Length: 88
Image (cartoon, rainbow, N blue to C red; front, side):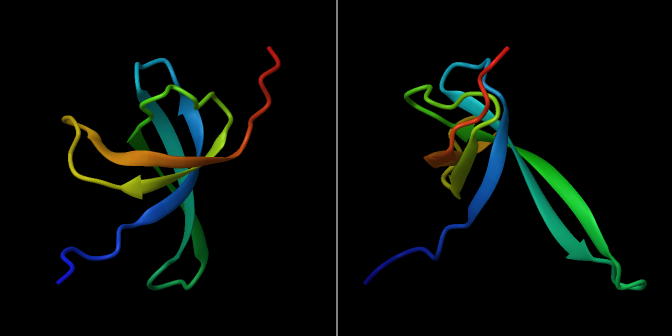
């Protein structure tokens, strides 16, 4: 018998990589207003576990839901979809 359900997967952009083994990922989504039916852009930031410190600012990454790893970390980086612009 298998346990658990399907884990959520999100795609977002890394906005901070200053922490050790952690990346801050910004996820944008469109929702529909319940009264006016207009689409609204909403965004949320998630702390994601990055054990090899591979993520850099600007990278597009896929994150997956996981067990709590720390006080604010409940996501893990699965793969880097696109490398960001690293020019300074």
